[in-house]
Length: 420
Image (cartoon, helix red, strand yellow):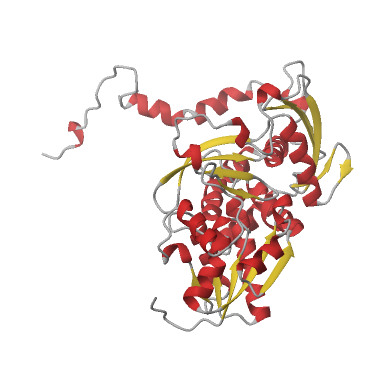
């Protein structure tokens, strides 16, 4: 292998999964460098058990882990939630939000241990390679980036399993049941295996965070979410830290089959992919946040926020978390969130989220204005002039004889404007 420069020490973003496990011996074999495995605790839970022993057994000289759960929720999830960002109508950006945070800490570890390179296990077909490397570029472009999937001759997960066996790397994935999963406090994603055929229904045994609607409780559950300036702060009147609040809602939502999404999405690299996401707590929070915004934000702000949400989601999905535009949009969102303070009551039932109440001291809803009964604050006769002025362009259009869909109208005569 021809190397542009000598690599002495590399910090690998390490999850303990198949891909990153085989990268450790591959880096040593092909670059002759020391490998430091960095693990980001963003809520994987049981996946962290035994990782240090596994990393050392795979050939790493050092294992570093950072607990980033609270930072993940407070500084990445909540800003994205407040923006209302959803990618391609369904995806709540769980992996997309986590990657820049992981990369940020990975760069910090590289500085601490004196590494001259960073590495990741993202494939050359996916989005994560872009998310990792754009963050490296934004935070320290001097670090050499190694992306083994773009260099080695391993072309499938089966090849990786064989490589692991050859180098005595402990792995838990088998050739008979292969799913590529990414789990954090916000969601659990599933790709590969049976999901490579988008016509096939996912196997129920694949789901880990949520029960099926058929097996969910027959009685609904009412949950009340409290917000302070757009941030969720309490469930049913009990305050929690950001991470603990999300964990609590994950458990509640999972019980009621909330948050399952089956999506064929357009990847940044140009291809379509089929995946399934489980986001129980996040789905509840997004629904509650939208309900509260409908109560306290004016129509123009809501409509413009919807426009911003689309761009915000695209930037996060594309790995542009540390871009000036994403930061500027986040500032705009924050200026809208002061009045998003209050409570929302939701009914959870067999995969459905049903709003049953919302209140706020900043509510723009006024019963005395909206009532259909007798009132003194709204003179209904004023509407006539408003409608006349609001519809004036339509009247002018019709008077000019311009065609209207579904109606036969006289064609406009422009000949009188022609010069002799």
